[in-house]
Image 1 (tube, rainbow, N blue to C red):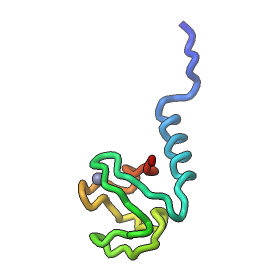
Image 2 (image 1 turned 30 degrees about the vertical axis):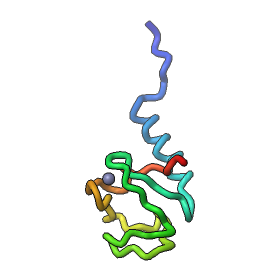
Image 3 (image 1 turned 60 degrees about the vertical axis):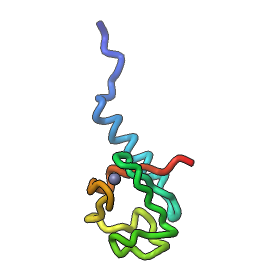
Image 4 (image 1 turned 180 degrees about the vertical axis):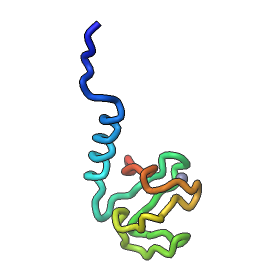
Length: 80
Ligand SMILES: [Zn+2]
C-alpha cells in the first residue's frame, strides 16, 4: 500500500493551530474547548484582573481558564 498522506498528523494539528490563531482578532470571543468557559474581550476577566477591552492575544502567557485551569492553547474562536 502506498502512503497517500505525506503530511504527518502532528503537522496538521500545528497548521490548524496556526489558522485558529490567525482568526483571533481584537474583539474575537474565545471559548475554552474543555469546559466551554467564554472569554469576551469586551468584558475582560475579573478572575484574572483583566480589564475590559483586552484582546485574547494580549492576555499574559500565564493566563489559564478560570474555570478548569487549562492554558490559552485550549481556547478556540467562539462559533456563533
Ligand atoms: Zn476551561
